[in-house]
Length: 78
Image (cartoon, rainbow, N blue to C red):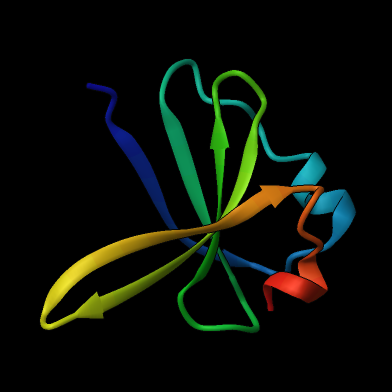
């Protein structure tokens, strides 16, 4: 089971910033959007990038995958 690294820093999602995010050595690293609360993007060690929505459902933290970048655009994810 791989561990996910979650960054606390928020960034303004742009095409250039998302494509420039560093790949983790293993597993996934998650970055969160400055404009939309709970919207994040996961960057996998293989180079895959997926938009996620982080919410608490019934008090339990949930990470819901919205879709893969660039198939899902920043505007669609927001």
